[in-house]
Length: 477
Image 1 (spheres, rainbow, N blue to C red):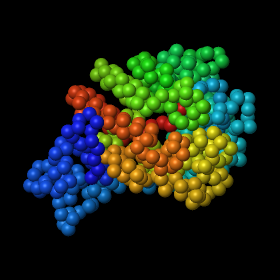
Image 2: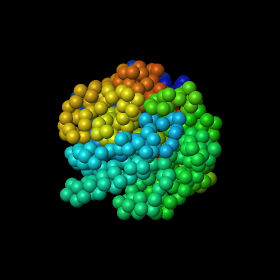
Image 3: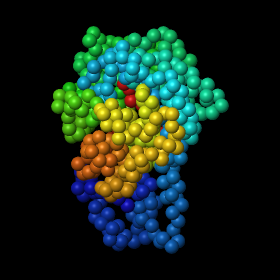
Image 4: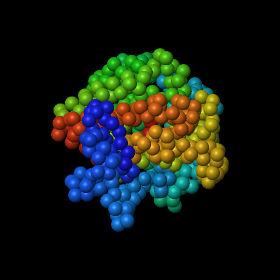
């Protein structure tokens, strides 16, 4: 049993089991449980036992139900990485201040994935055991090297005739300058498109500038063309929040509604690439982000009450951890960590990383988390000192402070994020921005659910149930 004092109600605590059962109870009753003075005949004892929070008699009780539930929640471990990111080029026509990678000029082809490295990457892809493979093409701007996207897709599809995996192709792109030929190819191979839309025109153009000052217009045109060719549900978008974004939670949500989206992803800035260099100008505190999220969530609930379904992607994932026993396997919410076990990145230069964040660190000159090269075997990567370092800090239940946190059954370890922010894969959890964000969001969502109307509860529970049926598309460029 782990517990957390509720910041909005000092008289109660949240308690959770190792398998993810939880309940909110008065502190006085919790103290009786700790002291061992709750009688077996009490309804409280039966409730606690049903949630695997206490055991009546170890000599006659069985752990089978608890272990079965635990296996269900951790089922993603057996599959191996399902998300495989191919960085086909670092070229990009944007100059975003919050860019997380080292973008390169449009004409600089030395930062393109070579044919030889691409062939090796395909071989490595099928060495993994996962029956479901999501192949995501990233950049830079992958459309600027679409021929490599095309050849990789064909090679993977051909190889899969004998491998018989379930393939899913995603391209993370600005969607600018899409050609009819590219869209026809994507349609034939059932691509999904993931793009970035930071909000209304004034905000998007400010966050994602182009010399022509037409970033928003080009993005909207790309969304419309993608939907027309691939279908309404084949195009998703997410927003990256800069300091100027925090003043517009309602406007950002309304922009997504206006464009017919039923999902929005509200992402805080990451400590990588140009985002680190421009932090003084574009950054903000976790408390500022949580205040923004609270306002955006309130508006999202109002939009849903008005009859228009719209969910916040990350909130949906957290709610599914709380309200369902199943594992969606989202990389950032895994323990053991999803780095290298849930995702793999094949970079433009042939180096391989256990996560996109590790690749971003490399773009800043720190290749501490490079697993190896695409011409080496997967077994070599997994046995590397780098992977051992990741795994040593990759089990949240064994980390200082996390081990005692009531939210740990629903959370992840994320050692690379802690390394990027604090210079250590374990980090100092009490001052960790990752932990403050996670606990802040869990607190916010749980409080909103508990204090909301019946209709609002049903809306939030509906988000959670949807999460068990669909996995999120990866990050856009």
